[in-house]
Length: 452
Image (cartoon, rainbow, N blue to C red):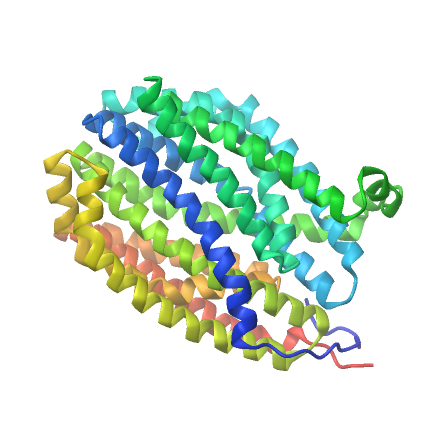
């Protein structure tokens, strides 16, 4: 967005309470997602088979990667809806979420159609050993059926968070993952379904959440008939709006591909070091994801408030949201790091009964914990850039930082082994934060037009 013409201004203030009002429910909602992964790891890990655990971890990673390519359906929709709210045009939010839902269904069906080649490529790239490979296939072939519903949920969450309805988004996520966790325990240990049971539990949770989310969306606008009356024929195909959405989608897809490319490289290198290293790194990485999803709550608040400020054409609110988000992010990062370090030995011991995996994970706990500090700026800038719809800035920064990560990994891992691999992760986080800061300082003024 650039200051090409005069726009009206809608002044508003941003307080710490405004940040926490969005961040706390969003953090609780987001934290349920990695908790599902942790529960699945515990459920399968306590079977004592490193191959099954490794296959589950790789299967979850595959879906993290392919779904991340459509993650723009949440983060892009949230930014666009927040700007619509700021410009006092909530009807535009309905059009944004409607386009996102239709696109999500189409992408999900395409993923199902391409399931076989996706699984083949994933297995070839991740190179699991025989036991892990079989478990990966079992998990993938069931969970792929969740694709359309998962992407509908992305679009719906974007709409809820863009409207600052964080408590509703939180409730939906808790419902989704509560179902997933409960059924995973029952299916795996109660019914003895093994790895497929964990995948089937995820499918059921996504279907229930998508159904309820659509019902809430329709109720907000007065029902299905009222929604149809609000949308003029051809509006969903509006050339300018669709071009903007696809431009945003393209850039966020590239950004997500680069993001997950780094995580996939990390996992693949762990896989090549053996099932013990793979499983131990996966446990630490899942703990990192837990910390990251807490941080995502602050990023979500930054996204909504900066997006609203851009839509309202009010720079003081933007600067205030920017500063408060960074301050609260630093406070949260220090707290998360201390909690992770102090609870790490107990959590790792609970997550797996395999002594070799436990010992390996404990050895690398200190360097993993430092990620709580090094990833903080990158996470907060993600939210600010999305709210500002500076999608090209985010895309380019992620691609450049991926190059930094790969260079660091290729340099450090041969010399220092797994220590070097984790060191490369730190280099990646720090590079992202530095690039985003530099780029945002150059682009910030262009976000706001002169008033009428």
